[in-house]
Image (cartoon, rainbow, N blue to C red; front, side, top):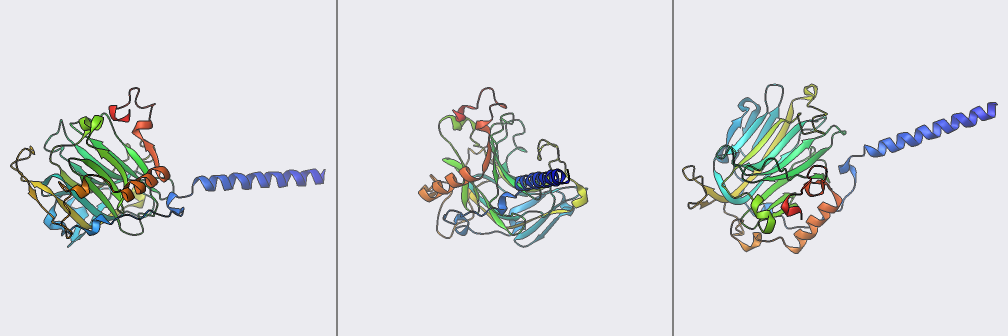
Length: 319
């Protein structure tokens, strides 16, 4: 009997250890995995950096914004989030910033780097988003990209990616290229998504002048598993650092927000590359295409075009 009990106890210990190991594996952080990242051209080295105050005004949360030259710190706490808005509107361009995300438990926190004209066109606005979502799964963050055109907010075109690094430990580049050819979303100069302006995509393509925003805010209602894990202010303040902003595009003066008039090229590049009309930005290079394929195979975990439970009839471009 003693021998049977010993065997039974050993079996329980072994099964418990297996369950513990499996549970531990399910909580492995995506950025703890070792990735060999593709080699790509560092487009962010080609454009001029600007001082924060010269390119942006304070959109909200003034007391939660600290600016020092080309560096800004935006804070989310119980009183407010914080946001910067570009002083100019742009009709296409190259937009980039280096961001360092809040460390620690950040479920429900949203850091957004995006283009929008919702203030000028409240019923028919365009938007191009990079949203960085704090998660409850340890300290993981995820990348969400999205595109809206002409107020089509009911048709979300989200694609989501895991990080291949820890975005809270150092600054990393987040970039949007938007011109008449395509919109490209890049992280550390690696394209993760391309939204072309052709075929079925054209009807959903942003076309009106937009402002650039950098914000941190409380996305408890939707950001973490549909609002299951709201912001826990016990861990606040949540501070995002912003540096090395690049605004190189076709700026439209405030008196002509329709995009039909002339615009002024801004943010001249060292190599004379033109993100608005230049052929260098009309298509992705072979290396960029390979890098994007790597990101989408290794790191993308959600695409609206695969969500049949959400869309009974898929958006036209998905076909």
